[in-house]
Length: 209
Image (cartoon, rainbow, N blue to C red; front, side):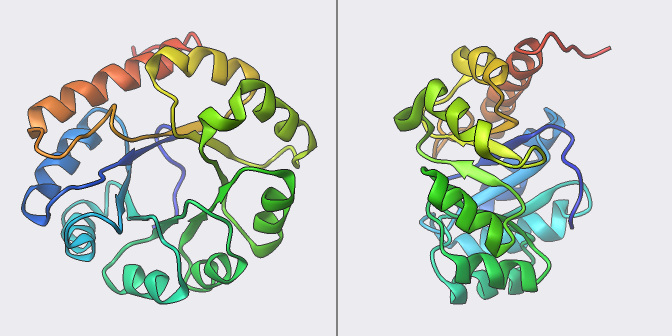
């Protein structure tokens, strides 16, 4: 499923178990976050992705994070995932992801990595870890990227930082422990998701009617 996201936010469900994935995913989607990432260093991640894709694939873009190799890309695709997020930039991973008509969001930290990723066909760029680059570093990178490039900040950015990052030109964000921690209930995750969505909208003076 390649679609415009309702909000430019990726819900990262690191550490989730398959039996709780759908209920937590439902809670996140209900809050307005319609892109779900299960990192491959979670317990039985492909089964979680399979369940999420089957149950929620018509309403959300579901896929994997921490994808490091081409074989993993194929496994995610076979499980029904349509999104591949990585902490690093590997053109072979990006190329295979795009060949399979999936969205590719590689991690980049430098201009060289960013342009290598774009040359390989990346859908968008994951600035990771964002806290290492900082807002000023992100602005310098943003200035040399093609204007249409989608740049998401991931790692060390939360609700309190949304306004300054958005004002500086970031397009979206990946939400990890602020959204979900292993063992949290769907109700708790939903509450956190709603607070993060509200903060993201407020950071640009947007609101819900």
